[in-house]
Image (tube, rainbow, N blue to C red; front, side):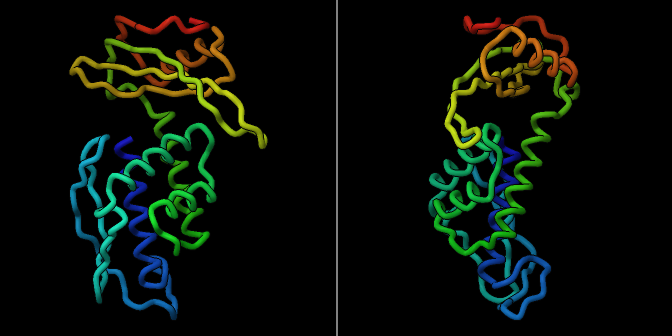
Length: 215
């Protein structure tokens, strides 16, 4: 989540700066008021850890992202929500547009929004399918399931999110995997755990869970 949040905040800062100068990064435009001039780095403490924020610099004038630095809590909450929600319902341009307007940004183009949505979708897919060998072995695994509402075919329906959290020998805890299922069947759990093993989950000594159906 920290990596996803950092990627999306920096992408949004870059897109917002493009809107301020009147042209997208590395694009020629008669509307451009000044070139970009690198970045200045700033640590930002969030609920998911400290992230490296890259604030764009301008050749003339200054760019100050007050939507993030002055309204940080609101921005952080909105972004964490959209990053988490995108796993369940996918990332759409409309969803990204709604996010940035919540932050008070109204000047991003459709191409910028589409590119940001695609980049976030790619990062989520990488997280879902990442190998688990390097971070393991995981001595303890906790299995859980959440019921959430998702939009499917124009209707809002209930879906079950299967979640596995692991703790390795160093005491480091991380989410190993998530999978959306229609219900908590034994087949759904078996498929979920088989995918974790195929991605490199090993060294497990103890698995705990509540009394979920299918387990």
